[in-house]
Length: 117
Image (cartoon, rainbow, N blue to C red):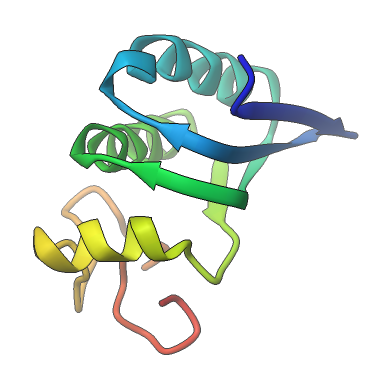
């Protein structure tokens, strides 16, 4: 997949997204994310030269976060977020004061903090 690079670093992995991530890519990206979580103790997601995305990708990231929590794996997104992603998060009200019910360590991707936005 041209817009996702996976780098393994010891027991962890780095997933780097670039270009466009749209609903046409979601199934493949979901499979790659699940495999990455299953194969590592921790995952870092970062964005480089990220151009465009849609709501499907945001929903996928939330689902993958819950899956990682279920598997007792650590997953985080490096900040700052790309503008295209921040726009969707703002437009659809994803920035939060508190994480979802399954999220107990307050590491929700979308918590409203200056360092997270």
